[in-house]
Length: 255
Image (cartoon, rainbow, N blue to C red; front, side, top):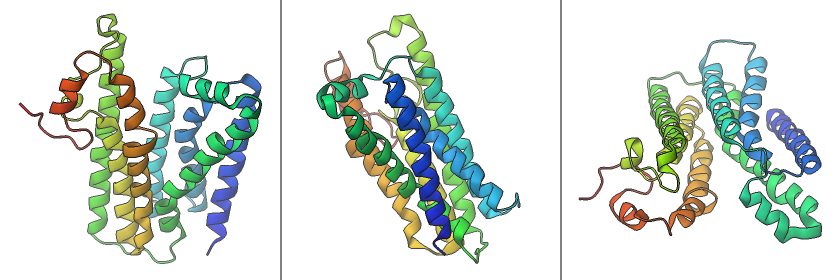
């Protein structure tokens, strides 16, 4: 029963160990951000292989995660600069002589832990001996699709906005960003709620909801929204935008 869990943990450990070695050699720990989405892509490929390419609920769920992971890694890879991201650069300065050891545990292994926890509903559905096929499973596919559209469209709108030199130093307030200050994060949370709904209705395992709860808390309170909002505080017009626009769940702006 637990063999699949151990295999996933082993793959994740080796995967982030390789990224740690490369990041240490080139002195750029921000490459871990590229590895985040690609890690889910690799895990999904592994599960599709184990399922012998059968076109069932297990494989369809794996394909959803594979699509998300590939799109996210490709998106981050395109925008990633050759130099180390300022967050990791700041930690490198603060950690000093301990940077290698602390980066291993606080950057790479920590992301590996979160990857495992977020991947739990996918493991649950792939590890299940009996799959309950019912119409409720469709709700998960619908929620995932809504989330994928929100994340991919808002990321594209942000990319186009940043490419316009007239928008330098400004923050986007158009498109989906008119209804949420972080529609891409809302989309990501939505997708994992969708995956969890599929896993829950297919297996009746309540632990399927560990994933969206963790990723939503991370986005809302830890590494996502708080860091971005803090960087925008001094920009002209942000406080007005903040008062009128929903922080996460898309809604009509206040007049």
